[in-house]
Image 1 (cartoon, rainbow, N blue to C red):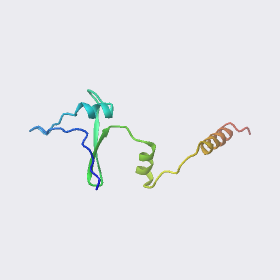
Image 2: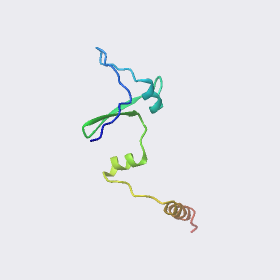
Image 3: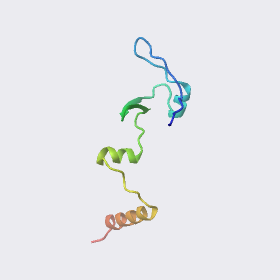
Image 4: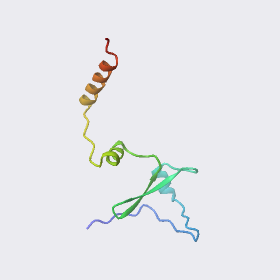
Length: 90
């Protein structure tokens, strides 16, 4: 059985507000004026700094499948082809 350790706890006010604990603010890299977004994944709620997505998350959102693994050689070859096409004469 897997037990996750709690990073921090917050108390909900009567107005439905919470304070973000210092440990969480530091981990997310947020401060006054930062925007947090709440998302549901499976049966859990995930809080993240708004606008902070990996290329893998963006790919999955657009195509609903894992992104292909790119190698440095493949990326370099793709750049070469693009440059040749863009600067082709004639």
